[in-house]
Length: 154
Image (cartoon, rainbow, N blue to C red; front, side, top):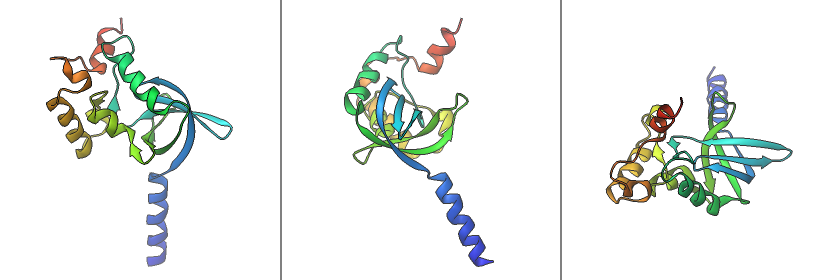
């Protein structure tokens, strides 16, 4: 019985921490990329963060920061989930650095609390960026992308 429990725990952990690598072939915005993984092109949405829309203030800057860092480079994706559009949702790493946190710490994205409650690191990273008025936080009252999308839906 103990052996079965150990195997079950090992299986659950391996499923939850599924990781793969791929070359970044497209940076759509500050929180979405496409990677080439073997023969497959995989769209990846950054877990726990939400970037400004391209038509929104700071949207192009957020895109440019990420693009300069990883376009054409090999990244590691630690998959957390899949979203309603079939994209992988995960943490993206480049040269060992968690880019989700990097983008957040430097004020290039918002913490997406709704989808990552309890992520203390993410909360602290956003608070640091706000306090230091980095990136989009240079604006006194930036509009979160989820509000921008809702207002511009019609």
